[in-house]
Image (cartoon, rainbow over all chains, first blue to last red; front, side):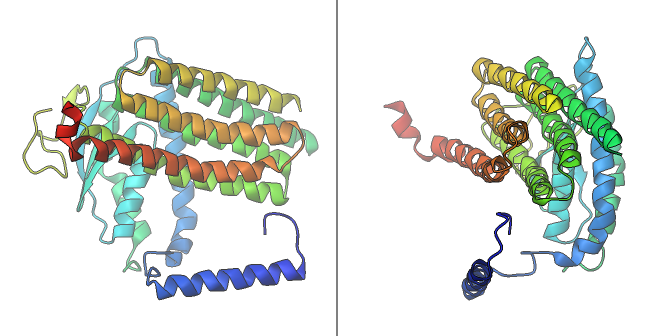
Length: 144
Length: 117
Length: 93
């Protein structure tokens, strides 16, 4: 679809290939509920803008830290608890933490995430659990 | 209209370039591996986002715009995976982060016995 | 055209600085991190060059490079995570 050529022949061959791959995948039993969580799409429409806004705020904070001559960092390790129920929710939460500049999830076990934050304030914000609640709402009751 | 788009595009491209340079500067200044992960996430989110957005405004509603959106989505999906894998591998290799505050109580998720970091 | 050139030059300077970290990097992970970052920046450079030269075909290469970048990083990390503890006796030889 991305090449800009739209012959009937090419479209038919492409559709056949897609069907073949789906058939193979379902024979190999790799198609499951986690594969493509399309039911989250509706809630994703307001979750993603929120996440982008968080990323912009945190990115500007980290940029200020980098540009200030004294390099005021206070690296902190902290354990946070993920309140999500499904694997998709926890992975979304861990990925959101990592994607936000200033915090990186280092280790993940069951429902506990060890996070490395570049400043103590960042770690405290995360421990307050706002992002956790938003991701939980994003996950909602629909998951699993 | 054309003028406004051009100015916005300039703005986003310059902002993205600035964040890339800031991130690289941070990468050179930070003291240890774990703190160096943070400037890289600045590059991969804000720098990349600014530049792609600037290009997107120039592309308009074409196939090129669709490809640019796919590139941005792929980077946003894969960057945290790579960063997390890197941090985890560094921790497993026994490199301990330099810390000002350790609030884990010496317990790191995934390890049985508490380690004194 | 002008603004694409400016952004391309900025990204190239960024790549040079990241490469400096790759050369200086005291540990292995600094180098892997720098390599991963250079990969992401190369994607940006490809997209920008496509616009500078007016040939959007470069974007296809950029998409492919994004995917390869992740696989490359994970593969290198897997290798070093697995390679060390598997056979400690062999390392002594």
